[in-house]
Image (cartoon, rainbow, N blue to C red; front, side):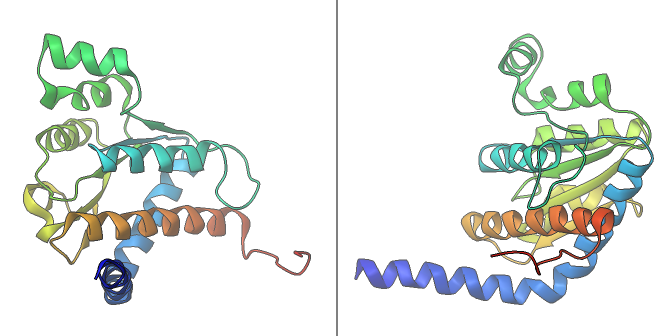
Length: 201
């Protein structure tokens, strides 16, 4: 019984990824283009999310500052989820919903990109971060699910919305991770061209 349940998780995850491939390829490509315009224009990427999405924001920033699968120059990315002193000070002195928006106002500049991750599309601190980024003339790349929620309603035409067509948080997060890897690979492809595998073991 337990093994069957585990097997079903794999099947459902694989099915959703297959279904999402066609629907999400265009917005992911648009996201790569937005990141490239930011990077080549001297901008930086700010990333935020809560819980598992916070881990995804940190994962993405690490791949850019370090590397994804190939050596390349370091790319400017900051996860707004990592400074415990800033997060707790803002949450304690102001409000938890402002933990990202205050950082966006402090660090964001026109031409920067905000990667905003929320499986529900309704996280209040993510919504406020998007509003702060819009006020800074930043582009938003939003990763959501469950129809996009409130985030889908406040995005501008110049923003990019990658909305996973599912309602289960775990499945959405699994696709979000694949989306982030596609974004990293796309950035490397744009910067470095096709990967040369002729010399690999």
